[in-house]
Length: 472
Image 1: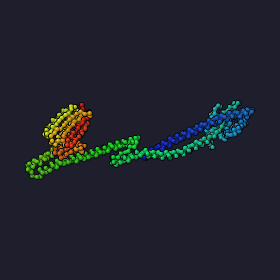
Image 2: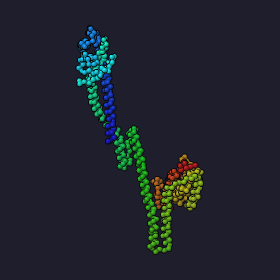
Image 3: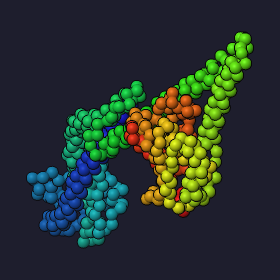
């Protein structure tokens, strides 16, 4: 069942129950109040009849003898003395002797047995014609005789009025429920409109349109749900984009890896086939063997790079306290031969600080970045910079060169495996596009970040920030 129909039926049912119970209790309370007044009137009437009988007895019966004829005579005088009303009474001794009776209904000995000499009681009786109140009291005569006076009061109209009120109420209930049903159905449709829109947006996202967003029309719970849905859709679109980027990087990795293998293997197979099938001079044989050796070394370097990348991703780092100044000076000594050969100088300005890191891996990062700076200088004289200082979030290394720079379109991808800005120059210098991937993974494993800022023709600055927890 649709949720709007659930709202419709539940609201209609609750309305029906509440109004039915409320209406029933109201009619019942009104009836009970009227019934109580009728009971009070009946008892008051019986009391007045009791006084009237005594008065008529004293004025009508002269010999004061308590016999059936005198009782009948007094009762008849009472009935005739009230011509404007229908007086229905019964006079008896409380047993089988009934001395006067114009009630046209049988006696109720159970009522007479419950009342005492100074008490008055009543009972509601249902008759074929309707309902009547029977009220009884005791008259004690001067001779000590007890006379039971019963009066009958017709209350059929009271019960008929109650049934009429129930009938009118049922008719009003039908019209009220019809109007309430129409109102509830319209209200349920209005309340469900934002959810239907949200459902349509969900289906469109399910079909691949990740740019769909729900309209936030209110600040209630449904509006909050739409807002949360939009946040979810934003995150879903971002994650989907990241998955697409990861899939693209994986495809590029596989394609680049295949290409990096294909080129040296083609050369090695070609020169090996020449050595196997052709007569060659000793110099030509040496040249072919030299090409095979160089391409084999290139494959070996590629294998080691890939192995380093896999090891960095999976190994547990053993962080040690290392002095940043000592680390920088050690790297200066390692880089000095290659930089001197390229005609470059290295300026090191690093503050003393104890860093928690894996020294060999961090050396690999800084050496690789300095070596990339050397290659970017492209044989031109100049200076490389290795800087280090404390910052608010921890400690940061800076590697700066004044080389060719990196185009803005390539900055976001330079840490991808096998990605090379200038593939021909990188291969000539023995690169395979894995160095920055390894560096980025090492920095990430230390909980840090590696950021690049470059201007074409002016050089590149690489910032490596280490978290505050890694600085002592």
